[in-house]
Length: 228
Image (cartoon, rainbow, N blue to C red):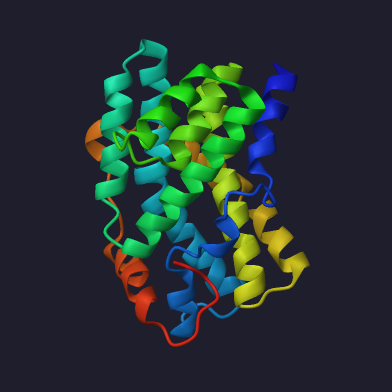
């Protein structure tokens, strides 16, 4: 089991080439508006992003997908793939997420050779599905036999690490400050994972309007280094 968990943790590396380094998911809008300008203000933004967007979208999706894989209910997965895409109103964030999902899927399929990843890739190729990193990550975790709770936790961790590394460049923060934030967020990630497992499908998609608006407004910021 330990080796399988470590295999999944490979996907959490911020250098894993999914393209996450080019996505801020609205953070850059807050930076441009001087609402996020240092470690403290970024930590507040990150907590809101975790608790009000990740928990109710990607995180809950990972939980539902894991259960659907256990029950071999593939139609539920394909439905969720569509819901994750259409409820993402900001074009840049929607397109960026799809590109990340596609890259993660292609690399993961080559590494793990999981049959479900091939099925997912074929659906995307045939325009039957869109592709989302939370679904790919969960498919890998389930294939490796990693427990559901750990799979969700690692997905949240990988997302937070990517955003912290982007904040280090954009605000900018020092590398030490970034690593301190990742350490300080460990308890938050554990609590978020526990919360996700208590939610049900009806809770999916409850997202902060402020975050959605910032993602939409990103298309019109004056100077930017991120795609979303």
